[in-house]
Amino acid sequence: MSQKQTVLVTGGAGYIGSHACKVLAAAGYIPITVDNLSTGWKEAVKFGPFEHADLLDRARLDKIFTKHAPVAVMHFAAFSQVGESMKDPGLYWRNNVIGSLTLIEACAAAGCQKFVFSSTCATYGEQDGVALDENSLQAPINAYGASKRAIEDILENFEASHRLNHVIFRYFNVAGADPDGEVGEFHQPETHLVPLVLDAIEGKRDALTIYGTDYDTPDGTCIRDYVHVMDLVDAHVLGLKWLIDGKGSAAFNLGTGTGFSVREVIDNSGVITNRQVPIVEGPRRPGDCTALVSGSDKAQKELGWLPKRSTMEAMISDAWRWHQNGHYDQ
Ligand code: UDP
Image (cartoon, rainbow, N blue to C red; front, side, top):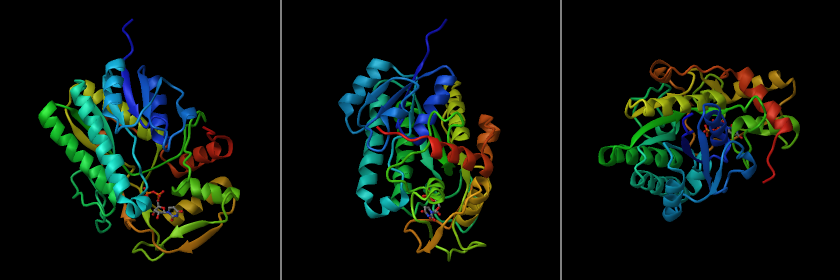
């Protein structure tokens, strides 16, 4: 029997990274979590070894590459809050951009030529309500999106200089949890819509504040395209296969093509949990786009990606089950 291949998973102790480790292990790889635990949880590292390391520490990264000789890197580790990025952009440029550059340099120096990168639809910015495909103009309006856009550029340069092949995934809004309940979404503090709605339902906070009701949308609230975290990480395994098959570098949107307004997410959550959602209407959050909806099925056509759980019903009920039973202490 051939030996299992290892994949370095930065941010493997976080929400999306921990789900990626689960599917990588199920697909026969050994996921090596590299995480500084600044926002992740040791307890979420369940599917392979853990390396407690910071991406800004190049010497440590070099040792990790030598020790594990990964076939590929999946890079999830990042700060990812739009609002925070507008208040403290330096945090985003240092942690996301310099951290990623350090990782990419270590990867290239180690001769690892496969890199899967978590990017975001926030790289597109405000685009007049059009559905976004992979060739849409990338004009981010917040520091988070700008930091991810910069990393995409770095990857393109390293492909030319070091043949570092990359698959870039531009995520739309990720929601839901592992239906087996082994891992789930748990941020401290929480800033994302679905878990905050569930907190409000459970009385863990007084109410969900809707950030802006005067957007140019049918109900005045922002529209986003929600994708189930299990579908999202399935795409990453397909992206890895794409790189292993030598298909070169590519960028794919990961969204369903269907937009839901903030009010629609709240209403669906109330119906699916059969509970009241206390809400208050607040001002817009700086950096938020009116609407972000994926307008392409490139990932489905070219990677063979088949989203299976990205319905509101599955996303909210999986998140709700996790929310009631699962959390991390460390
Ligand atoms: N949102 C909201 N109240 C909250 C958190 C989020 O109205 O307490 C809105 C936010 O303005 C955006 C949408 O919900 O329009 C999704 O925000 P989230 O932070 O979950 O993800 P993002 O789109 O920033 O990646």
